Figure (cartoon, one colour):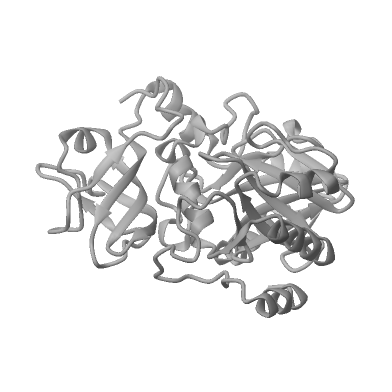
Length: 345
């Protein structure tokens, strides 16, 4: 974490961006407007004259569609088409940035540099050069608009001001990801707090990601899911027209030959033990060697109550007895708000 940003948050007593088995009492899920530190996110900067061409051959989305007003979700896959990491992609001036969990940064940096070869591009950890925080709700709209000139209206849209960016993120309520130099971030955070935003634990942002059906690949689930298993094609995270990239043949074959047997659901469960990314799901009669499903992420909404994203066999999910662990509680499943489209079962 940027030390100046850390000192700023500490002085304010803001909740820290670190894993915590918390119930969201500091800012309950129905809080009208909240601020969340997102220092658990890191940034990879890719610059140089061949940066876009290099990245085009490494990620699932079409880098050519990035602009000063548009970001995109994307992922980097193994040759077998399974996601090693997923992230948000954006362009700031002449550099491209990947926004992803810091826990995924080391492995992805190493892998991208391995593919760099003679490309005229640089790959750097920019995590402490810029600050990330989230705004949930509309109470800070005037503060944000005053700095960025206009609020982005559509999911994944972006407004720019200087070295900073304001990105609209999908959700039940207006959500904005702020990426800015530390002095700008401090002023915006202060202004939003004065406008009525509650300083909340970062788990609240993750909970809203879950409710929006936005997956995050974590170390426990690296190399586990083909993008379509986590609905990436339904949230504009995969391009099927861009050409070759690592794992592209597997991803395209699954899309066009209708072989997808798993997809991602929102789930609710009651248990005293926090579900963890990668936890196995079980279902009566399932004969899959991989098991009927796995947890993608989970956050508490009350004591002993959790909302999760899970990747599950469609047949097991429709059977109605998908459980957390061997003898755990039955999951209550629902489709994300964006639905499942025409994905083949």
